[in-house]
Image (cartoon, rainbow, N blue to C red; front, side, top):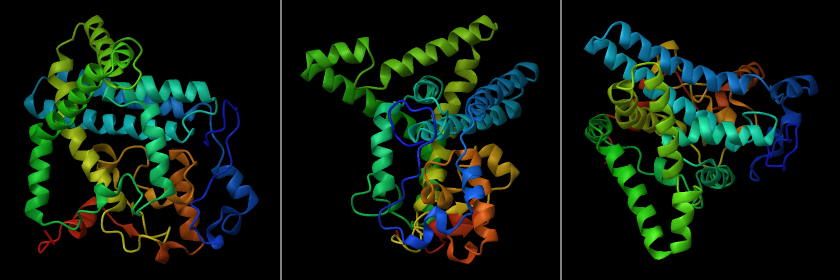
Length: 334
């Protein structure tokens, strides 16, 4: 949803300024089709948040029932992908698309999605909307995620190993912690905010949300699952699938100025959706075309665009394997 105060109804989509008039929704869809696509359910968003947490706890329960190393690794992969799922739902909340009520939208996005991962919705939203405004242009704050590609296979494997070893997690989290310490040392007022009311830093919310999670697991008699499953997933699989998401969305797109080709849709299969791409995150062309549609409408938008003949003009890959083969070819650029 659009940032429109505390309104209860979905805001009208705002389109990228450089988009040709032919790609305005009214020039693509009938009035009934567009009304269906832009409809925001008051139930579906919260259910998706519940699904992410439910699948997380189900993976934990499976490991409790069958404490085998293979089950542990599989559970870590499932949980790490649901952690990415929470990030995807936080992203929907940044667009006011997780729930029609703005206050509930922000509460769900911050406390059930962002905080457990160490993010802050209030900081993410303006940065992400700037990405939409300047996608793949010099002013795009996310340009650094796609600009280095293509890379060599060896470089890709080094990145993957850093993710799976926890080095990426340690580097990112230590940077956040040191930045918070520097702010606290240089500004006593901000120090009180960081510690007391979560302003200016994601750390207090991160610690609070994870403390609550430990408490829930302790009440179930299995606080150790935080150490055995949640933290390993957050430190290994979550950074990896986040990287794959970032590569898939904009790396090596064929035309930075064409809204049908400056983002990428990956036709993820069932296993990819379970272990890599949750909650329709792989429909990224559709998201950039109509960025205030909720994630659960993107597949329908994709099918409508294909039916209306836009498929050949869109940047679409059949799988994440195909996408990676392009982003890291055998004779990569660097």
